[in-house]
Length: 249
Image (tube, rainbow, N blue to C red):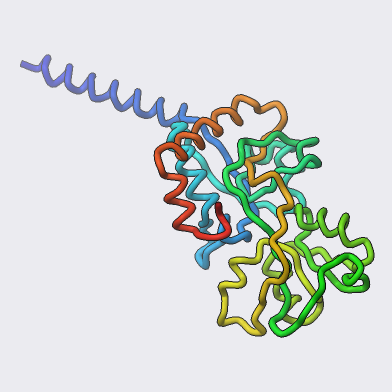
């Protein structure tokens, strides 16, 4: 009569042991972004990260059956930190460029965005290289936008900022004449004064937005590519893009 409970107890202990072992063996992947590039990634008032990158990263990790966590890193140092193995992948609205390909490998593009020139409402600018001589152009440091203005506007003074928030703040304060960046989220903030408007045509400064990996991590890159394709095929990518809105395409 006592053997049945013993077998049940043994089975219960075995299941608990297996569950614990599976939990311990579940792969840990650390994802980095700057936490200040809306709508891709941003830091909420309570300190949590949110945005398209976070939702997309979690959805891919679920497909990969991996346990993923997110960390933030200052943007201009994010590639060196990846190469130093402080985290495993950058999912942070990073543009794919030839210069960056010399240091990291990229996934297939998971989004495409355009940059815009922005000025304070009421100011008019001709954004030809000749007309921009002597003007102050603000960009976020370490970005494809910074590389673009350095090449295109050699006669302008270029000021580099650690974040888009700091950049737009100085534009509104009159410390820069014009900015180049992914400014659509800031254009939507109509309650902030002076209001910012975009001028000229959109500028495509990269091959798309991709996830960045260390050069040796081709298997991890391929796994994320597979998960991304699954999300495109099942409609989840489109759902998230709609949720977070422009400039995600």
